[in-house]
Image (cartoon, rainbow, N blue to C red):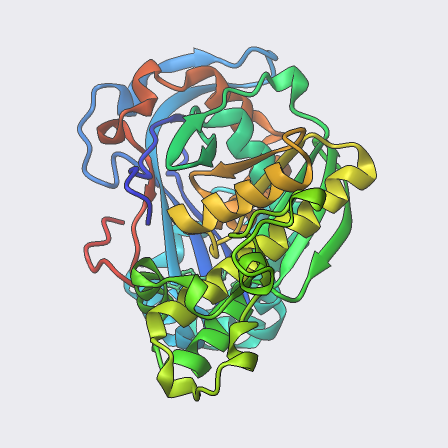
Length: 403
Ligand code: ADP
């Protein structure tokens, strides 16, 4: 994870008398992402605002109470779905179905779920937990999750180049169009023109799954974090063939290539008579990370060019707030666009689909009200990590899940 905390605070609006506790899932090829909303009361927060702050909703349709709550963001490995099932069964999920009025039918609990796993594991959830997965379209959810974050959460988007992180405050009236590039196991590129107006314009199968899959085969690493950690100490020049390697140390300046530019990823391996074990795992990991990030940055730029988009927003868990990954993507976008297009990243990069599924439930049940209320009532100190309520608790790496 990046050094920045993932805690963000908001106050949520709910109907009077309802106990709020709700969740949504994004079950992907590599990871299960979960968004749980917990009313502060149930989390033990005795804040005076948490119970009885009454307020009329601006559109005049409803009157309700403010409830302070926490959005907990969690992830599990899809291959260890039993951990997720076990976690849910230990959390007395019965409460989670209450929020959406239509989500409880004949005492069955229905939970919004997106991603391919919502289909693949539907029976398992029913059998083990009695939960019916209410399937939400993956692209719809990615887009609405991204729009939600960009509109609701302050200091969500940022640029990253040469080790410098800069937050971008996007004017809401100027949010569209943008290219959303979600780097999960595979990569989707979506042209977003409005709240519900979008088109998946491209993608590539060379994504996060490729990094982890090839990385495991080439280095014997067991996990994404191990592979990422290795890449910190690696040097890609040991394996990548650079322009200088071909041109005797010289730049190919006529076409704008410096001697340090990569001419061929992993290309040195063809000229050196070495075996896999002669290369350090650190260098392999570094080259792999660079190759994949660079390639995605370039394809993203080409699609932005295709549709005249200046803003490219990258999400998905492949990024993991990792400096080298973001830097490589930014440099690729900057290089190919000659500085015209910008790569932006999101602090809650990996939860777009899950947040989209979560907000789609609000849309069904509360007519978009919650999102608007969140926008209005974000406290001013939201930037400070200690203030947070979107909480990225990580069951893979952190056992202290406060849900
Ligand atoms: P999907 O929905 O396809 O699972 P994600 O957005 O969750 O996509 O991203 C999955 C990718 O994120 C993996 O392929 C891997 O590259 C990367 N990743 C980041 N953290 C982890 C982790 N803890 N375990 C496995 N993969 C991870």
